Image (tube, rainbow, N blue to C red; front, side):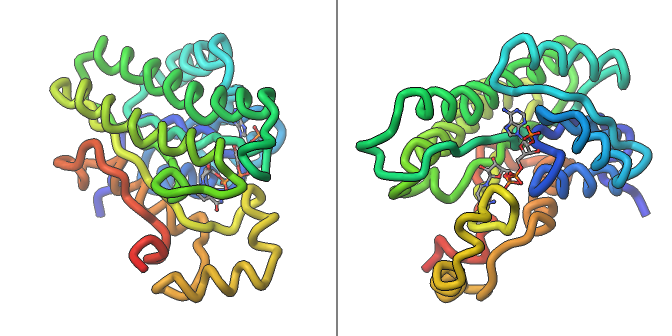
Length: 250
Ligand SMILES: NC(=O)c1ccc[n+]([C@@H]2O[C@H](COP(=O)([O-])OP(=O)(O)OC[C@H]3O[C@@H](n4cnc5c(N)ncnc54)[C@H](OP(=O)(O)O)[C@@H]3O)[C@@H](O)[C@H]2O)c1
C-alpha cells in the first residue's frame, strides 16, 4: 500500500491537541515527517512522542514574525524542506456581543488567526517558489467564517478573512503548482469548543440540525486535511471544504 505523504515534510500549527494533533498523527501515518508547532513545548513534546517517529516538536507563537521565521529555519535545519503547511493554530479570546469587544481581544484574534496564517503561508510559499517545488497549503477556517457569528463576531471575521486569503493565494500561487485550500469545520469536540460542547441543550440543538446527527471529532477533520495535502486533490485549488456533518446544508 502506498502511503499518501511518503517523502513529504509538513508543518502543522496548533498541533499539541485537538484538530491539529489529529491532522499531524494522520500525516505521520501516511508517511510524512511532520513538525508539530504550538506555543507550549511540553505538551507538544508529549504529543510528538505519542505519535511516534516522524513527529517533531518545535515551539512557535504563530502571531509573532520572528517566531515564525525561527519555526521555518528550525524545520529546514532538521528536515531540509517543507512541502505541506497546515495553518490551524487559532484563538478566540472574546465571547460576547461584537458591540462590547475590547481592542486588545480584537487585535489578538486577528494577530493569530489571520496574520499568523498569512505569515506561515508566505514563509512556506517563498520556500516552495525558491525550490520550484509543488506544495499544498491547508487553512483551517470555520463554518462561522461563512455566515453571521453572533457572540463570536471577531473570530468569525478572521475566519472569513482566511477564506479570502485562501482564494487569493490559490490564484496567485496556483500557476507555480502551489495549491491553497481551506477546511471549514462545524462543531468539533476539543478544548477550544468546551464551552459549547459542555452545554447539553446546545449540543442537542446542533445535532438536530446536523444531517449526520452528531457533533464532530478531530479525526473527522484529519481525513479532509489528508485529502487536501496529498496528490489526491491535485486538481482542487482555492476551495473551502465544509466538514460539519451537513450542518450548513440545512
Ligand atoms: N473545535 C471546533 O469546534 C472548531 C470549529 C471550527 C473551527 N475550528 C478551528 O480548528 C482549529 C483548531 O482548533 P481546536 O478546536 O483543535 O483547538 P484546541 O484543541 O484548543 O487546540 C489549539 C491548538 O493551537 C495552539 N495555539 C493556540 N494559540 C497559538 C498560537 N498563538 N501560536 C501557536 N499555536 C497556538 C494550542 O497550543 P498552545 O496553547 O500551546 O499554543 C493548541 O495546540 C482552529 O483554527 C479553530 O478555529 C475549531
